[in-house]
Length: 46
Image (cartoon, rainbow, N blue to C red):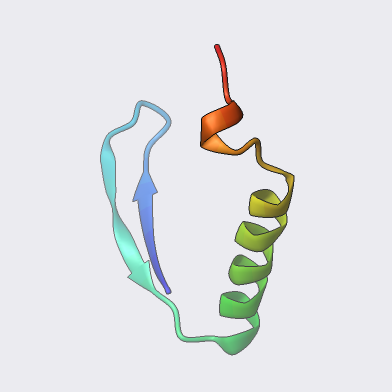
């Protein structure tokens, strides 16, 4: 997993490569949970 870091002002602060299986599984689960709750693009209105 490659994490990109930014400052509070949005400036680039570097990156970190992480191969820890627990971290990778947690991130994947987080993205899947968000996707399950997301509004499909074709149904989204502002």
